[in-house]
Image (cartoon, rainbow, N blue to C red; front, side, top):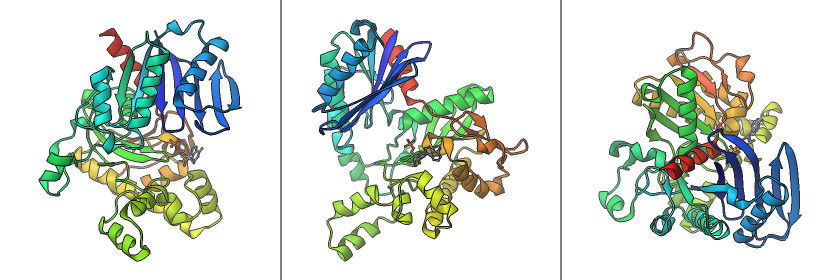
Length: 395
Ligand code: AMP
C-alpha cells in the first residue's frame, strides 16, 4: 500500500510517500514559498535530490505539481497507485482522540476548531481539499497533533480560571506535537524491551517549537504546551511560560495592542529574544563558544525550564524508565542535552560524555549507572501518519 503523508502549512507543503507496511520512504520533499514568484519545489527520490524554482500560485497548484512530478520522475507509474493521503492536522479540539477518515463532517469539525489554531487548521483544510480534488480515488486521513494528549485528566488539562471559560470557549490545555511524542514513546518502549503499557517515559521534543510529554503506559498524562503552543518551555522564538500580567504591562508601556505583544511572545522571544542574535540553536552554540553572555543565558534558561518540567513529570510518573530527546535540537545538540541532564544530578541521572556526542541517531546517551536511561531518538511523524492511514483504511 502506498501512503502519502502530508503537512500542509500556509505557504509550504511537506510530503513523504511511503510503501506500507514496510515503512519504506519512496520519495520525500517540500514545496516552499507557495504564493510567491520564486516558489521552491524540492524532492528526494532514490537518494537523488531534485530542485526547481518556479512560481506556484496556490496550494492547489502545489499539489498538482507534486503529483505531476511523482509520475514524470517515475516515483509512481500512475497516481492510482496512491491508496490514501494522511494529513497532519494541528488541532482536533476535544472531538478527536484518534486519527480519523476524512468526510464532510470531519472537515466541518476541523473548521469549527479553527479559532483555536487560526494559522494552521485553515491551511490544513486547504491541503485536504486540494488532495481530495486531485486524487478522488484516495481517501484522506486526518492525524491530529492534539489527539495523543486527549488522555490527560482534568487536573492536568484544566486551568485554574473561571470554569465558564472552559464551558463557553474551550479554554483548557490541549497540547501539541502528539504524533512525535507518541512515536518516540513507542520507540523507547521497544528500546527498553518492554510493552508500551509497562513503561513510563518523558519525551522532550526540542526543535524550533518544543514541548515535553509525560507518557505512562503508552498514554499522555501531561504535556508542556497548553491552550496554544506558546506555553511550556522556551523555544526558538516562543517565550514558553511567563506571568500573564506581563502582557498588559508591556502593552501599556510600549503603547501596543495585546495581540502585538502576544505576537512578540510567539515570534521574538525564546532563543531569539534573550540572545538578540538568532532563533537557531547552531548559531547560539557558535556564539556560546565565543563567550557571548546573552546566548549563554538563552541556552541555560531553556535548559532550566526543561529540567524543571522533567522534575515535575518524574514526580507525576512516580519515577520513569527513560528520558528521550528528539527533534532538531534534541536529536542533534549534544551541548543542550548536557546542559539539561547536568541539572538532574539529584535524581542520579547521568550522561555518558562519549555516547552523548551522538547526533541524529538512536543512541543510549546515559551512563551504565544512571538511575534512568536517557536516549536520543530521531522522531518520525510521517511514519506515524502513514501507520494511522493504513490502519484506518484497513478497517
Ligand atoms: P526542528 O524544528 O525540529 O527542525 O529543529 C530546528 C532546530 O534544530 C534549530 O534550532 C536547529 O539549529 C537545530 N538543529 C538542527 N540540526 C542541528 C545540529 N546538528 N546541531 C545543533 N542544532 C541543530
